[in-house]
Length: 501
Ligand SMILES: *Cc1c(COP(=O)(O)O)cnc(C)c1O
Image (cartoon, rainbow, N blue to C red; front, side):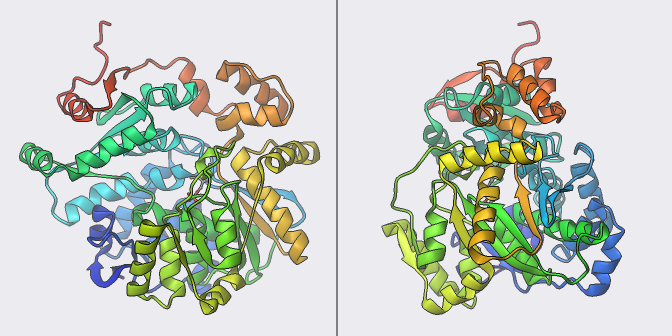
C-alpha cells in the first residue's frame, strides 16, 4: 500500500511520508494506490469487536509501515478520551438512525480524526527519520483550533501553536482555547480577522529564512489540515462500525444495503464514506447535505463546480465553505485516475473559479451520490420538528442532514435504512438550538447549556462544564504583523501567563 498524488501519479509516498508531507510537491492530495478490500470473513470477525479493534483492523490496511501494536497504541490513546461509546448509533425510528460522532473531547466530529492523527504523526516522523521537533501552526476561526489543541496535547516530538482573531470567535470558543492544557501547546490572539491570522501563518510557511533559522534551533513547521491523509482515513472506520452495529442489533442483515446522509463542508467526511464503499461496504447512496452555501448541490446536478458566488454566514458555520478541497480526491477517481486532467481542473478552479466535468463522469457519480441543501429557515424548522417528534435536540449541522435526508427519501421514494451522521453535540451551538426551539437565550453560555439540558434530557458535556472552573493560561494579544514574535515567545516559553499574575 503506497500513496500517489492526485496531480502526479509518479509522486509516490509511503503512508508515513504522505502524512508528514501533508500535500504533495505539486500541491496535489495523496490517495491510496489501490483501495484495500474488507472481506466477508473480516466483516464477521469485526461484529464482536469494539470500536478500537475495528479501527485497528481497517487502519492496518492503510498503514503497512506501522505494526499492529503501534496502531493499537494510537487508537487507545485517541479514543480512551471519549465519553462513553466512541461512535454510537442511535435509533430514532424504523429505518432511521443517527450516528453520533460528537463524543470526543471537543464534542464535534473532527475529534474522530484529530484525536488520533497526532499520535500517528509522532510515530510517522520517527519512521521517516525526522529528528527536529515538528511545530504545527494553526489559524482558526474557532472550532478546529480547540480540536487540534486537544488532539496534539502532549503528543511526542510535536508542538502546536494556534492563532485566532481576537474578535472573531465566540466567548465559549475563546474560553476553550485560552484554558487549553498540555506542555506543548500555545494560543495567541491576533488583532484582525480570520484572514489576517491565516495570511500570517502562510507567510511563516513561505519564509525560507525563518525556516532555516528554526531548523538550526531544531524545529520544522507543519500543518494539521483536513486534506492530510491522516485526517481522512480514521473517518472511514465509523462507516463500517455503524453498519456492523446495525447488524449486531438485528436492525439489518449482513449484506443489506444502507444509505448514509452526511452534512458536508470540505467534503472530507463524505469522501471517507466513498472510500468505505470502494473497500466493499454495502452502501447504496451517499446523500450530500449542504447549507445555504450550496455549491456542491449545484455541482452534483449540473456537473459544473462554480465557486464564484455569494458567501453566506449560517447557523451551521462549520459547513460555510465555497471550495471543498477534498472533492479533488473524488474527481481523481471518477476521471479514471487522470492526474493531468485533475491538475488542469484545479488550475482552472484557482484561476477562473470553476471547472466542469464530463457527461460520462456525471453518470458515474449520480448513481452513488444524491445532493441537496437546507435553507436557514428549513434548518431551524427541522430542529424544532425533530424535537417535537422524538424529544431529541439536533445541532444545526445535523439538522441540515436530517432535512436533506427527508428530501431524498421523499423525492426518490427510497426508505431503505438511513444513517444520518450527527457531526456536533447540540451543546456546542446551544444558542442557535435554543432559538430554533423558541427557548430563552442569554449571553451566558453556561446558563444556555443548563436550559438545553433541561429540555433535551441530555447531560451537559464535560467539555463545556469544565470550562467554568478552568484557569486561563493564554491571554496575550498580538498585532497582526507580529505572528513571528508570538512564535518566538511560544518557543521561548513566554507565551503563557506568569504564575503570579
Ligand atoms: C467540519 C464539520 C462538518 C463538515 O465536514 P467536512 O468533512 O468538512 O465535509 C460538518 N459538521 C461539523 C460540526 C463540522 O465541524
